[in-house]
Length: 206
Image 1 (cartoon, rainbow, N blue to C red):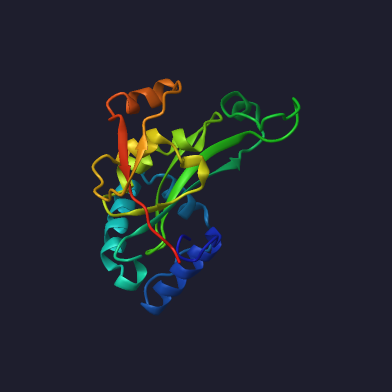
Image 2 (image 1 turned 90 degrees about the vertical axis):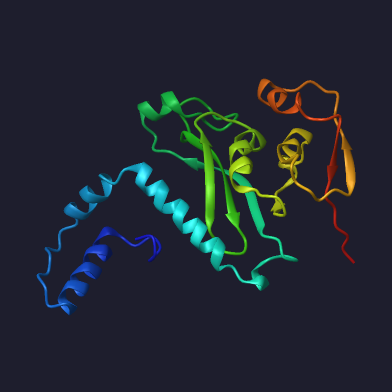
């Protein structure tokens, strides 16, 4: 289903039947219940291990022309997903700001990161309540952004404390002075150990 893109369970069973038929082995029943039940039993820890192994494999297959000046480009952005409108979900997930009571759908807020070179979905973070994209992306940046990478994001991510996560990065051209304004508890935990200024990378375009 993953490789076919939005393929229904029926398509999975038909492909399995075709494969078994070509091998002259027993052809399974056309029902989809067994496939769906087996898929539901797959442990998330194992799926995450498979995902991490695929990401590592894809990263090793990238060609020089898929990099930008020898650097991997990673895309970071946020969105929201409509959840099923049930009383249980209404107790957990938030609604859009300004939504009238009894209208609309509960929302799951999330941020995701892609590799522009390999096209791989590197990871995501979610929240049942409305949180700024910047706050949601901290763990993604820590896990998936390495020295030398280029991160493409909109202005929502332009913050001193986000840049402070990459103090070990070596590209240093210009300096950003530490802002004096008050920060949330999460941001204070990152910014307090940060220096009074941060060297930043820059590039020129003609």
